[in-house]
Length: 301
Image 1 (cartoon, rainbow, N blue to C red):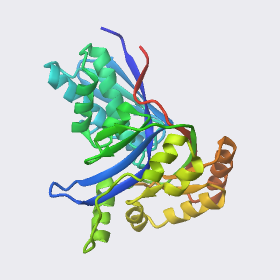
Image 2: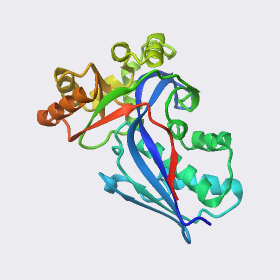
Image 3: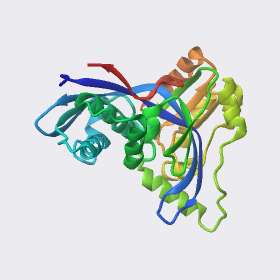
């Protein structure tokens, strides 16, 4: 058996998050356009006498180290399918913001799944891995695939999208997290009594991705959860204002928040906006990244 396997897995930004009305099962139909970005966690799988999770990096103390962690659930799910015991030590080197709307937990689940598949030699097909990902959570399949994709259903059904260029981003990380269920609950409260349209991908946004047109993408960014996130965390409005005042082409709450994402013209503009955001005092830190990025990838054994 291989001594250890390390998988690198990216964060994501939702350039469109179209949200429909709550379904009877409590989920919402989505038109969720994902872009993987160059902020990464690394998950290392090593043989062990039982299932164990450790974590290091920014805000590692906020990461659960029990069976609720998606990395642990991924290992257990894969082992269960192949009738083996999930005896593995999973170490997460954390760099994706925790509880920040950038799918860090989902990334760790996808990374653990790929690492355990390689470590145990289970030989699961891509389709089987994606099926397990969908069981783990709505964002986990995209963390495995990366690049760009349209997620429908509750976000787990993916259609790959063409991207014709590189997009530059700044991510402003807020103090503390926001609960995704709480944000969806606030969306439902704000939408009560209104006719919520069925979500659909924006043709202008898909064209912007296909052609690599940053200005067109800036005008098409939309997040239907943003009003709910701002309702729960009004201070995010100040962060959005600071980023756009510093020269960002557009800004929006990333996913369910509280991280805010700013699309900028180029690498130089990214550094300028990041410095201005830090100086504004409206965020804890600011990170520069590009997209698209590769999905979960084995980087060493």
